[in-house]
Structures are given as C-alpha cells and as structure tokens.
Figure 1 (cartoon, rainbow, N blue to C red):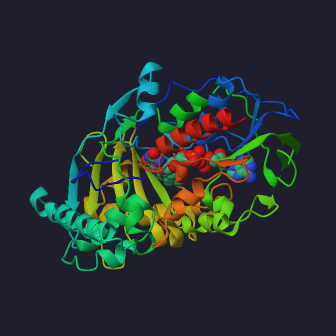
Figure 2: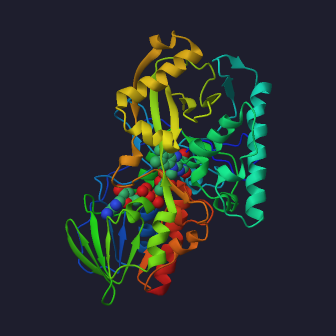
Figure 3: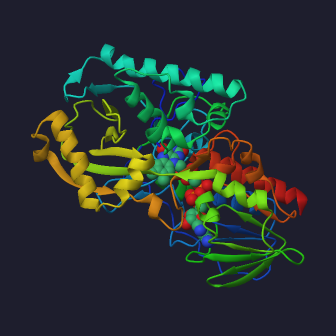
Length: 446
Ligand SMILES: Cc1cc2nc3c(=O)[nH]c(=O)nc-3n(C[C@H](O)[C@H](O)[C@H](O)COP(=O)(O)OP(=O)(O)OC[C@H]3O[C@@H](n4cnc5c(N)ncnc54)[C@H](O)[C@@H]3O)c2cc1C
C-alpha cells in the first residue's frame, strides 16, 4: 500500500525499505503434535505474533502454514532482481510507533523515515511545478472533509458518494490517491465510516533490507509446519479438530489468521457452520487488490535520489499507477496499481503489465530511460489462492461488521489478522498487534 492517508494526517504524509545482507536465520519446521493447546492457522505477521505470544505464556502451540514459507503478505524476494524486492508490504506505516521499527533497529536493520519528494506531470505528460501539484492535495483535503462529514453524520456510504462534489482537473488524481493507491479499492467500494474511524497517524518509514526480510527475521525460530493447509475446523465437540493436508490436529482452541478473502471463499469449512452474521462479515470486510509492477533501472532515471514519488494526472477512467522511485537506492521503481484497474491488469500477462508501466514512464521521462531499464516483474495478489486479494476494508454500509469479524465463536474459534485490528487494519503492524492481543486473550481463557 502506498499512500495511506488518515483523517488526522493533513497531506503528504505517507505510508509506505530494502538491502541485502540480513537474511532471516533458518525456519524451524515443526512436527505436527496431535494435541496442542492451540492451533494457529497462517504464518503471516499475525500468526507469528500470536504463536510467539502463546509460547511465551507456556502454552503448547502448533502453527500451520499452507505456503512453503512464512511471512504471508510481507515477503521480500531476493532472487528476481538480486536486490530486496518487497512483493507485498513495503511501507512501515505509522513508522515511529510501528513495532517493526524498534524491532528492526534492535536487530541491526536499516530503518529510516520516508522523505516527501515529488515530481508531478499533467495530462500532456509535461512536468508541472510543485505549486501546480498542490491542486491534488487540495482536492484530497476536500475529499477527507467530505468523508468526515458523512461519517460524523452517521452516513456509512461509499467514499465515491461522499466525495462526488469534489471536482476539478486534479480530482481524479486525488481519487486515485485515496482509493486505488491507498485502499486497494475504487472509491465506490469502501465505507466512509470505516475509513474515518482509523485514528492512527504518523509518517511512514522504510527498511532498507525489505519489510518482508524484517518479518521473516522476527519469525525465524518460531516453530511452524509449512506446506500444511487447513481444510476444515470441526467445533461440534469439546475443543476443535483441525483437518489439514498433513493430518488432523485436536486442540482446545484455534486462532484463524487467514485473510477475509480466504474465509469468504469458504476455503476452510467450519462444522457446524459459523453463525450467519459471522460468515457475512467475511465478505463485508472485503479484500481490495493492490499490486506492484516493479521495474529495475541501472541508473536513477527519476533524478530524485532514493524513495521519491512520481505522480501523473489521472484520466477520468481512473486507470493509473503511482510510483515509488529508486526504492532504498536499489534501482527498483514500484509502479503500483489498485482497485478494479489492478484486477483488470491481473488478467494480462506480466510482460504486458511491465510494458504498460514502462511505456507511460517513457512518455513522462523520455525514451532515454530504455537504456537503463534492466527488467521488471508484476505481482498478482488478487489471484493468489492463499490471500485472494491484498488487504481488506469494509464495503459501504458495513463498518459495523468489523467488530463482528473480530468476535470469537464458541469460546474456541478466534480470529486475528490485519482485518481484525480496530484501527491499523490493512497493515503489517495491525496484523502483528492483532495476533498478539488475540493470543493473550486466548491464553487468559484457556
Ligand atoms: C501488494 C501489497 C502491498 C502492501 N503494502 C503494505 C505496506 O506498504 N505496509 C503495510 O503495513 N501493509 C501493506 N500491505 C498489507 C500487509 O501486507 C498485510 O496487512 C499483512 O501482511 C497481513 O498479515 P496477516 O498475518 O493478517 O495475513 P497474511 O500475511 O495473509 O497471513 C496469513 C497466512 O495464512 C496462510 N494461509 C492461507 N490459507 C491457509 C490455509 N487454508 N491453511 C493454512 N495457512 C493458510 C497464508 O499463506 C498466509 O501466509 C500490503 C499488502 C500487499 C498484498
């Protein structure tokens, strides 16, 4: 997620690090005990924090993960470009208070605040001055105010309906910034009340070695059973029985940390079925799609040093990308797309997506950039069966379902993960804090 703004932030405050060298120590592959106290499903930020917390409280835990690695949506790929490439989360939101900031600094990572440097281009691909670019932020401020008025007035409507009066040449660019580039959704698909009730604020930070490397370092040493997919949770008797691709585990409780996309798709069957409103919460707190089209350049073609931002005037169809340039000084540009345009692009080949982003940059910066272009890649989180999207937010009118999503069922099925954090949803920090807090509740109850 790139530009995640909250009502308390005025403007240009960004969410949103890389470098080789600090690789996580080896993963501890757990044997599947048949009778632990707790099963934790998923080894992303939430599952790792929950497992660590439960183990620290002396409980026997087994964490299972369908994938062959830990980290979930926070993962740094070190092979595609030979430099750290965050295929999921990259920005340490609310950086100064983000738990991974102090964890990273204590463990030798390079963590630093994001800077606020921009280049803006108009519809004719001409660069405009920073003053002209201010029009975007003025429109964005108007949109924040419109959303606030709707939410404070008790109208949980779509952000599109709330902001329809904001018009002007840069309104579509502001809408892109607020919707696809931040929320992974078009304005029509998320709730004003959900967005407004997000009290956290603070500038973003980066980790040079990659946010995914940081999460993997945190998770190293926490036992996990990889390539172990949960297929069914039976809570008809005492405790729970979790059926997995590697066998069945009985426990006193389970903490489910998979995305709402996975839950809404019914990839894990519950017996008996969960209450109707609980099931409804999975689709009401729905996944948006946010993807990186990563382009590697051998030189700083953006001429902003490390971690600048390039934004161009968005057409009314909203089909655009926003760019984090020369991330961490490693020569990678993250050309990020979100919402319905990201879904549409996922149906195109990776090569076509690279070509789309490169051609637009060529229009803006000139064809000389081709001489420095090395190669590209594109992520497809919407089609990933282990996430079914990038991160979640409430559908218009569905803000109240956030708390339903967080509720436990039968005192033995607990839910944690980014979408369950009351204020820092959609973030790694939120997932981590949710995992910790749910685990401490579980430990108290058992
Ligand atoms: C492209 C992108 C960019 C993002 N940008 C940022 C950012 O800059 N900053 C930020 O803070 N956040 C960002 N986010 C969001 C952030 O990555 C997530 O909020 C966070 O990582 C979610 O952690 P989690 O533990 O809740 O879920 P996950 O990381 O999804 O963990 C759940 C785990 O469950 C596993 N699983 C799924 N099904 C099963 C099953 N049946 N059995 C067993 N295991 C299963 C999955 O493989 C996964 O590892 C971004 C996400 C994406 C995709």
